[in-house]
Length: 183
Image (cartoon, rainbow, N blue to C red; front, top):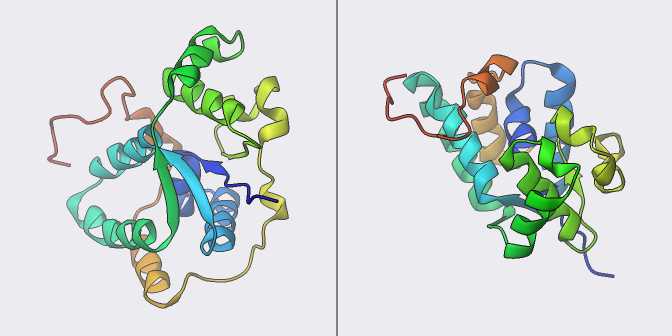
């Protein structure tokens, strides 16, 4: 049987640094349990993570990016774009039309993938009836453990970044990267 490679979104990637302890523990459980396996993340979700981090003070960026860089280098995170069928489904599926474009496109990607599974903390995606059978179960993941060696040390340093719900409010999804990088 082929390995099911789950999708993740920015809420899970950045969730490793969330102020909410449950979200942080669930996100860490995902990454620690899948570190030797693979995960899928579309280009847009990677960009959303960058947009949030680029709005942090430079001192926070300087301790966050080494962790993110090594994690992306050492873990097999398959980065991918959209197919035309996913674009069409996102635009035409009744339940997806109520979402923001980046949410609808991710949902379409999951729905059209073979054995698609999505791990997310996004309330809009979690509430979608059409995704209900595709949602990953954080509670089924091993909660214990740490990242290997240097990555664990970098993670501890990167905890200077603490994600809060207000960080999502400051990301304009139509223009993910502000020209003002003075944060």
